[in-house]
Image (cartoon, rainbow over all chains, first blue to last red; front, side, top):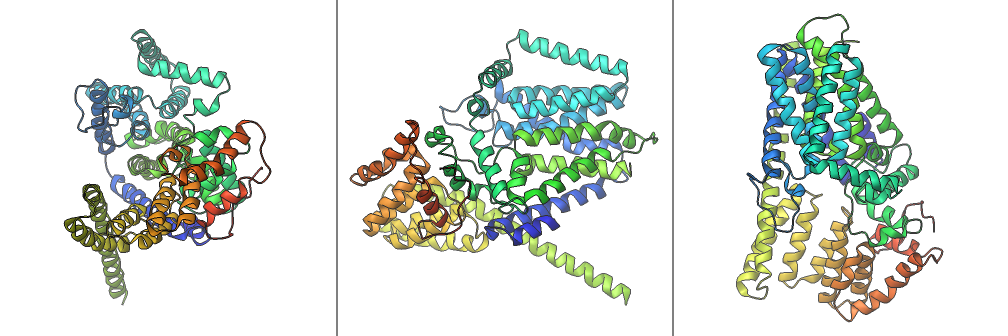
Length: 340
Length: 197
């Protein structure tokens, strides 16, 4: 909040930065409320963010299978773009589901009997929806978190989880899930060096954000000002990237929160971001056997990795739904984690 | 004394919270109104010259102006009010709103809107200038520019595209456009230093 206030004062468009300052203050209040809410409660308080995630996940699956969709779309819109849960975009719903899928799998591991079945079912539904959205950044983030989780697990549990993942991948390949084709296409584009197409034309927003940071390294162009400065910086890329001239997509967000934080709040903001991630990962009480402490011990590092990776390809920190879920779980880790 | 201070602090926080929530509620209401006004404006544009449309536009201007006061960074509200001004045959006011919107968000369609409104005002040069920036920031807009302005805009922007695609960039060719985008076409200001031309 303090750094946002400082960068709002130095902003190149204070009106927009003031709006973002309000957003950041609201986020801080939400985080503190989450810390207070969960403090003395059982681990099942985690159902509070998991239930909406499951609801969205079920709707995503129904939308993709063309069984039911609460929204009406124009005929020319692709099936993937109609797969949005209760949000506005498949990428947004993908970003929303990443941290809950990590929480669900951790809860599944930490419980036994009926509760393990309950959380396992939640993990299956959220995981299936994540695959259904075909949001690669979200899938890579979830994959990175799962890998971190596996590395921290006892060998027996790790083997079982790896078997589940391997069987899931095999089943996906066998039934030709759309995500398999999408991964293959993107991999081919990367291999051919066509980063522009491989990143869905986002290289221009990455480069624009980087140039904003280079021009304003300490305090950035100002919170909330990426979209405001995008067009002039995009035009400045034409000489080195003439292919951008014919591009019709303009970016209000950079689709990479790391770069966007650098561009809008400078190195100072980026340090704060990394400090928050580090704090999230390091809050765990080593010896405590209470369910809350055990959850945090298993969840903290994978969830921090998930957020760190997710923000490389999307902008969840600019969206209310994913941000509130991330903040809620950050509140949980802070409240139950104590000091490392 | 301590208790009085505590109660005072709690009361102050409560009042601030109520005001804050009230403000957020107003914004939410304006957000809904924006969608509704947009639908109404689209309908008004089916018959923009009728007396009924003028009366409706007049009423909607007051409504949108109220929301602009609540949400001063709401680009959509400025665009809606400008569209209503054009129905009311006040293109100069429309241009002012579009240009103000550009100080918040540099959307390519705003340059198109400015071009159209400047034409309605009879300012042909300003219209060509705005259309040129529209075409530069979104190439597909070139086809939407009315004649005879399109020919002039095409003459200005096509060589830039051809030069780059032909691998013959002209030094400094984009500086002028960048400057005009940054200033909204109103003289020099800070512009991105990373201009590798």
